[in-house]
Image (cartoon, rainbow, N blue to C red; front, side, top):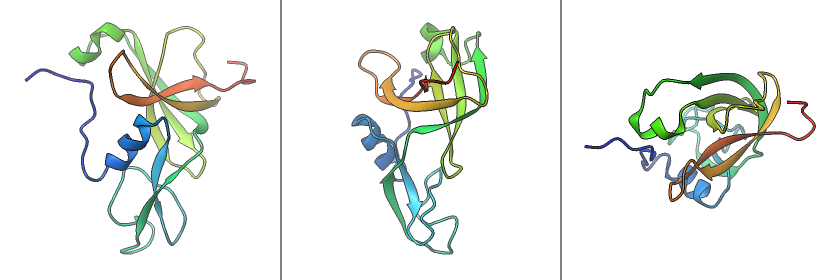
Length: 138
């Protein structure tokens, strides 16, 4: 079996990937508390047996960590070396991992960034990609 960079889509995360294909960031929310969360779950992590619905969220957040890969750990990403992955904390505290294109002009930890949904390469599925927020100084 060959390695792929395509996500493993399940019944739990399908709403996320369907929205990503449209360029929209959607997360599961607890209906009773209104809080978003990740990873997805059929029941709220905030209210016992609480119902969950998927809602759009603002794609802006704070970059909390960043790592640059200069060695191939996944053969499917070899053509992207060096590539970077960042942890972005969105409003409400949800943290998502996202790719960061290029090596120069990188935002610094603590900078405000935006998550866009775009393919890593032509013909691929849209995935979370970090872009620098205007006026950041990064």
